[in-house]
Image (cartoon, rainbow, N blue to C red; front, side, top):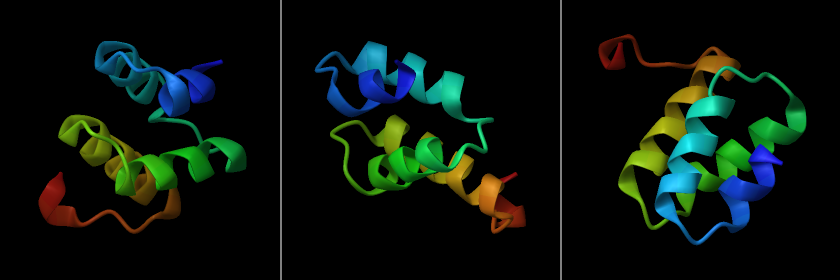
Length: 66
């Protein structure tokens, strides 16, 4: 349900809540959604949060972003 909200909801507040709830997930399907949203979303916060979550899960987080 959270992935669907992140992918499809027009309300940026709903997408923000979804990406924040998903940022600790390591599920492969969720990581695919985060990877997509880090490249394509109208909201910069959502793109940045998705990128950090994806990179953290992949172990590629830049230490300067901590």
